[in-house]
Image 1: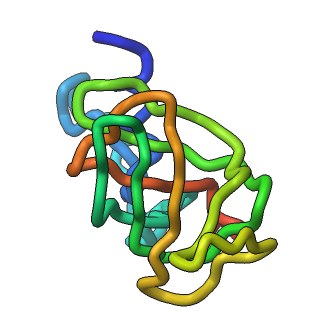
Image 2: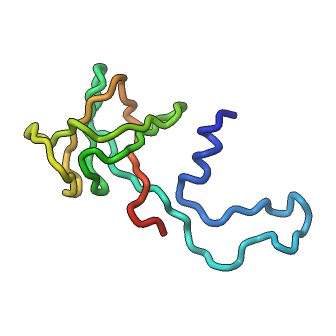
Image 3: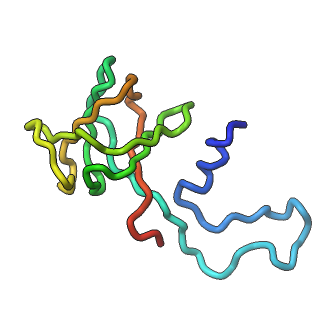
Length: 127
């Protein structure tokens, strides 16, 4: 299994992991301390338009800044990590901050983006 697949297990929202009873009943086994979810990443946007040239428009879910590191995750592929540069709104305006919910944000990628892609980033304040 590729390493990026194993890494995804810790990037999605999850509770503390436990091996179950695979290794028998362990004294320090199951985590009972709390039922809090571990969320270190957040969704930045979901695609609303994608063309064959790599141009993609995403509906904004959480804010991001110009130059911030983002990850594009797509089915069956390793995450594509990049800096959000030369990103524009619907009017073609570059901004320092994209922070309006459902705002349409325009990106240019060096490949076609899947309609099932997700744009995410490391949370500003991990829980």
